[in-house]
Length: 125
Image (cartoon, rainbow, N blue to C red):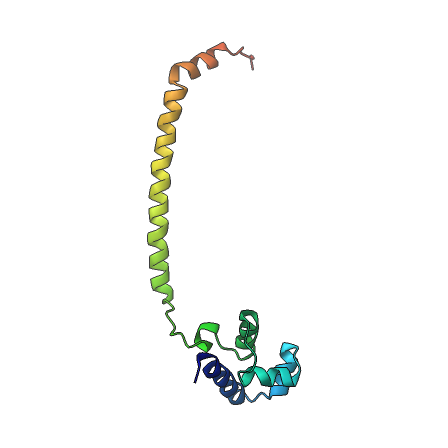
């Protein structure tokens, strides 16, 4: 049995478990009953977008429908990884900020900034 026919059979079994007929599925997908039946019999190749629609109708995540094991992280683990990533980004940005400050001082040394300030006409408020 090929991967495509295994997938077609899996879709059929899930559809039956959900209590849906081929007619129901065909209507919801905007297909004729014959066209949908051909999908389940493996006579027609499934496009990715069609697979996505079928997975939504069957209320099953696409990776699970395709037979991939769930590798979802727990929310806590995801937050730990995201925190580590953001801390690395923050550190990189802090280093970049310090480099720009040093360049600014080099380019516009304090003397030039002072001269600009002294050269301005005071407006007596």
